[in-house]
Amino acid sequence: MLARVVKSAGESCPGGYRTFFQGVDDSKAGYWNVSCGASSDRMVTIASDSSTKVLSCAVMDALARKKSCWIDWGSSPGAAKYAGLICAAV
Image 1 (spheres, rainbow, N blue to C red):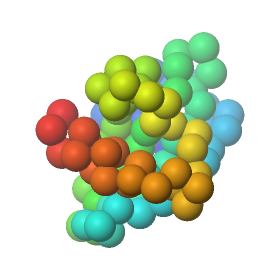
Image 2: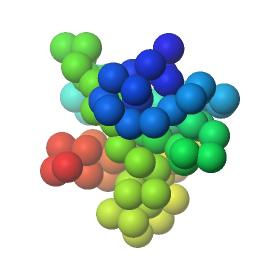
Image 3: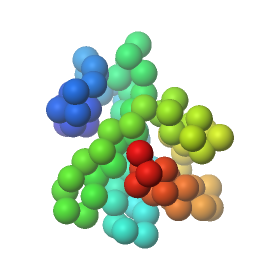
Image 4: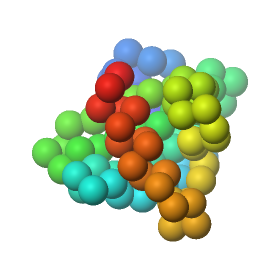
């Protein structure tokens, strides 16, 4: 399912080898990570209106200046706020 969302955004993802639900931000958008194999990992944002946004985890890490994907937001205070701000700006 998430691999199809990545593909529909025009990016390569031969298959979702691993997925991870990170959490929900203040605007009720859900954040998922999907491993697309050698083509890299992606963060998939699903907004409350069902619209989606796909960003490379490498880009997210660079913009946030820290690891952004594959982190449980329940154990990382403030992570949802940073991810939401970055996704809104991109």
